[in-house]
Amino acid sequence: MYDLIIKNVRIIDGTGAPWFRGGVAVRDGKICKIGMLADCEAERVVDGSDRYLSPGFIDIHSHSDSTLPLYPQAESRILQGITTEIGGDCGISVAPVDPERKEQLKDYAGDLEYGWTSIGQYLEMLEQMGVSTNFGTAAGHGTIRLAVMGYEDRKADPREMSLMKAHLRQAMEDGAFCMSSGLIYPPGCYADKEELAELARELRPYGAFYETHMRDEATRNVESVREAMEVCWAAGVPLQIAHHKVTRRSHWNVSCRATIAMIEKARQEGLDVTADQYPYNASSTTLDSNVPAWGFAGGMEALLKRLRDPATREKLKEESNASHVGRWGDIIVSYAESEKNAWTVGKSITEIAEIRGVDPADACFDLIIEEKGRVNEVNYGMCEEDIEFIMSQRFTMIGSDGNAASLDYPGLPHPRWYGAFPRVIAHYCRERKLFPLETAIYKMTGLPAARLGLQGRGLIREGMAADLVLFDFDTIRDTPSYSDPKRACQGIVQVYVNGVLTAENGVHTGARAGAILRRGRS
Image (cartoon, rainbow, N blue to C red):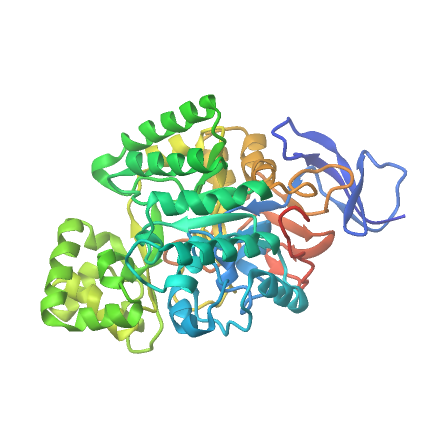
């Protein structure tokens, strides 16, 4: 007698192999038997009606560590078929925490209570709370640097390097899967290649990798990929290029051809390098990312002071406008914390500037001041040709770059929070025919599981965790859009996390069966 049998399905096992008909039996959260299961019995039997059954989708790149304590049911994740996710990416993790710099960390990583000081304590808190997805985290280089140096724009001294290494080692002992960096964001952007390589060497004994939101995704993609590779060659660790893309029109159809060739060459020469990508032509981040990095030295309060000083503001304004020629209209406000500026959500910086009768840079700066940095954007910057070229590569997996959230989350978050994985299946696989369905599922399950070293997830195999998604290939659709993002995706029939039904036909069951994952122990 099994707990669950899902029969009469087309099984896609997550390896990239062709689908096959059969059924899956589950007991105690594990897959116990795969086959036709004609003579087997279970407490619950589900007829899959010849739909597809795949492993639960694994989101290798998210920022849910900043929202999961507030939204533990994670509807934005579960309702698109994500059963496992890794947070702490782009150098931004919610630990380690220096109590004296807690307010700076709130500005950097999210406005949480921070009742923990280490990644281990944070994971224990989630374990006690109970969450709907399986969750693990990276150790953010930016957070580590902030804990030791704050927003100092300078080279770390030997004592500071020693402290950063100690924080990183503790994070790895606590089960972090990798070290991530965000080299466009202060304070991470203040680190040089030598600092990154010296820290990355600490990953070697743990078999962990270095993941980077590289230094420039607009006009210096080639140089940025080269820097990341040099860090990993020097440290002797694998490389994960986060959300690989080209965000400047002048470099479309050119830069990514060069970077993909670089990755292929590096792999031939022995560097273990892979990439992830979200399937949209717009990025999303904080609005203050449009301010030159030197303006952040000292933290958010120092930035706000510079933006209020007429002479300094003028210098920042000149640099911002010079780097944003023809781009302010592509930057849309997606969230503003105050009711006063709720009207700006959904409008471009150009539109806001026209309404206020000011220069676009001034409109941007004023919002940052008024919201004290708690204002986000969606930025249209990529082209479909580049997206498809990067996605089609054998080493590219899918990562949403989204957050755990509810269907009534404030503002207009990027639709990738709610619809990234079904979009790959519906648009790029079914409609664009970029690759077979089995390849799409592999990029979402087996490939990220292999990169993360998850031995018990990512495949439909006997003994593996029963993280499963039953979906209808003909009707699956990413219904979340830029104008209406907070929606359940169509065609996701059932989602199981560790054998527990967690969503059915676009409705969350309320289950919190997710496991807290730790590198080497998951």
